[in-house]
Image (tube, rainbow, N blue to C red; front, side, top):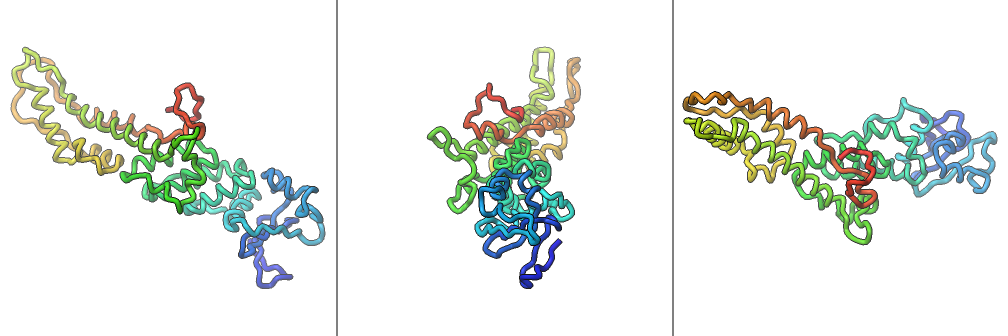
Length: 325
């Protein structure tokens, strides 16, 4: 709810708590948010100290009028949303936000030490969208890192890997705030999140190529002396030619996203092999589609990056990571 302050007719007050004893005056535009000091102190150690007896802001709280606390250097929109979450104003808390706003909220929550209070609502905000730009996903990745959400961090980086084919160097742009958040240097050397992203994308591309090429042997690999029709060889050649036609040969997918290759594989028909088969008893029609579907189903369960490996600067097997990998 937003009301007009009778003492400042030109100023609006957003009420996170209608009976609040404190008004936060936030940002250069002096956005006013009415809050309950007790609720703020429960959710935030920062406000516990600020609104305590040792700071001027904590004096004279509980009088006839709410105490104004000036916060000129903070993000008004982010702090307003955080206050609404803390005060259980779910009727005005947005279900979706721009990725830049989510990052601002994460940075603000970290400053005021109230990350735990955002734990559940942030799982909704941090849900990656397939059509999000790589910079948008980069914002979400940084927000998940700040909020210490291992599942969201894995899901977001997985989306960056599956749905984007270009370099991640854009994330290190000097004008982008991400470089101030993610640990681009660890243990005195460059240990970049972009390196881990590229490394993981290369791993998954290799696994996907293995799935693609594995289909060439689904008709068998042993044309021994009992086979008179070159059964497996003929099927392999036709299958490999089909890959060329579908433009999913290894050399053809270098500039294609992983998700696009998966879509093509799911839509690909079985190869048609001409000629007759001999009487060798082990010949049977290959189940290309079912075999490929099973392999892709396993592949689709692949995770993105591990936040714990990035945070502690190691991918050691013995590390106690919260996401299995």
